[in-house]
Length: 571
Ligand code: PEP
Ligand code: MG
Image 1 (cartoon, rainbow, N blue to C red):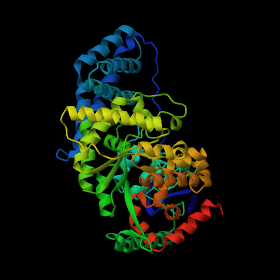
Image 2 (cartoon, rainbow, N blue to C red):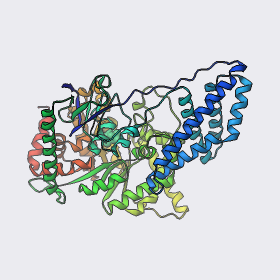
Image 3 (cartoon, protein in one colour):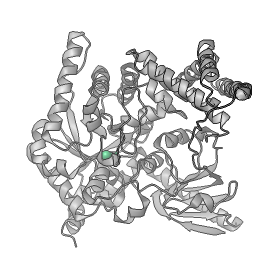
Image 4 (cartoon, rainbow, N blue to C red):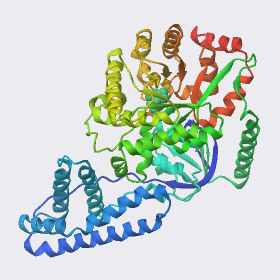
């Protein structure tokens, strides 16, 4: 047996078969001229590739349900792809160009597909602009076939696998959440990276920081992953497997015992009430939040919604960015939660959370985490922002909505957002569309800038929600996604705690609610410190709600205050 040690990321034990995700191969298109006598050979290769891709698509189409609504979007995409591949007019154009210019077939296909896509993009028609992405996608598949590149399809991972990969995208993790995955062993990714946050939400045991793990373990080997101990055990002995099976049973029993807290309020030993909310990324997770006894949704990360819609292909995200799709999703969550509050955060795309939308240009940024992320991106693309706000306000009549802006750094920025909120409200009123005008609008405090001016921000916001993941990252200058600096990522750093303290004080003085929705809100050691500092609203992975109730029940507020005082006094 071999044991690899990494960094603990998501608790839990998984026993399964190793599945190594291969590194992505980049498509490089050769460009050269050909002789007339090579034309036919090239053209046959193109036609064969088109046929193979069409057959693959038809097989994928057959595997999708005709009745299940969740498969509907994917079906429509594949059907459009097949029509595009069969389009005789486009094929004729490619052929004419090929014969006239005598470029190699790969370059010809790439050139003509790009030319076609850019015409559609510039058409000024939303529907046609969305088709541009389809053209790029489908002829990309044809090119991959001709170049013998076989991109890895995350859907092909078998159930029961422990996945070994260098890194994983958030959208792939969402796809995996719908499967029975025994664990994730990654080389890259920090403890507050979004992949890890998702893994925690979905209960997938995860270890990060496992150096070159994809070259150390072979596909098919039996492995055990222990998220808490940060261990990956390869080819364990039968007795070791039995030992870990016993640990899994114990974990299960502990979860069962926590059910006693399910319908109870979250109170300390001396009777102080806390509100425990859930962090979610898709409407379906609202059901999970309810089942775990959440007092509401404290953070709906709407960018995950679009990633989830995309499934294996990012292309669907481009299509589904419409007001109506968003409205349906928000309405579902609000209706699921009844009169419980639901805080929906406006798009926090950019940085590591890339979204492929026809409405969002691709910005070439050297340092995306410091770049056009979150509210900055929304203010740069006001139409995207407005579409989301329209969907949110339209949904507001279906429940107890709160709207929240991420990554705020100045009062001016909040005013700019509120100006767009005003425009949206005026539009909806003119269109006689009902909405709740008094929907609370708050901000995330997740930059040192916001915490330092929290006493000024209280004048332009209805509430604060502390995003401790980014607050830690930006205050300490430590990339939360980078496992090499994970040991420096310290949420208990005095610098971070002082900023949290400042924000709580400003919120209390102005009498506006302050909650925490970063990962600190779901971990027992930090919950105690936050509670001792005066936080009474915590938003976390739904899976941590019962254990948080249990934890709080063991302490009085005075005891919790003593714990946080130690940290604040740097003892
Ligand atoms: C945070 O930064 O703490 C937060 C909750 O937002 P996200 O993790 O989505 O950046
Ligand atoms: Mg954040």
